[in-house]
Length: 286
Image (cartoon, rainbow, N blue to C red; front, top):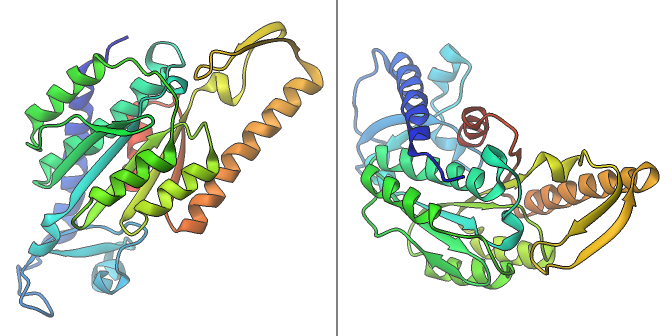
């Protein structure tokens, strides 16, 4: 089922809501010269994990009980890098719950709001290597073009997290936020190494899994297929086997979360049965 670009309309409403909150917070504030090296104050934004706590406006916190960071003109040079897993394991789920398409929409949401904030984004797919698919324009039109390119993509092949993410990390030359969207299925040691190579930047790891992976509703005689290797296994799924499966899925998700925490990066587990707007809000705001 192709991605309908109409979902961007939800992001317009989301951005308008954030802007309204920001305007209310900033009412009565005057533009002023920044502290330090002659930078000019330009805006506020919500605090995100990893931000410099010295930039928190504590007077605003006293009034709003919300953490806001002072932004200066130099901060507008931020580049947001979106890396979307396009391996075969992402080709799972039906309709709006398809992992690749759901993950793509999360990544496109970051690209869209980054462009609206007049910052730059880069969008890449990765399997064994990474492939940049944007043209460097960082505009709304570019996001719409990316929707078409993603709709033409068939998730396939294996994932080599260490190589794909490591090589991409070596290409980053400026202050950056890196968004990695993946189901994390594969070599977790390689994933950890690849993410570690990106961790000199701010990194958000968005793990997308379908409800059928998290808690299968199948029972009885069942054929399971590995989407990347195409190996199949026929077994009776139920009772203790079903219980062990769910335990292993929980352990898998916890393992990914623990590795992310050890690296000091943000990790979010998103089920593809969540409403898109709610899912995106949770990862954008944190």
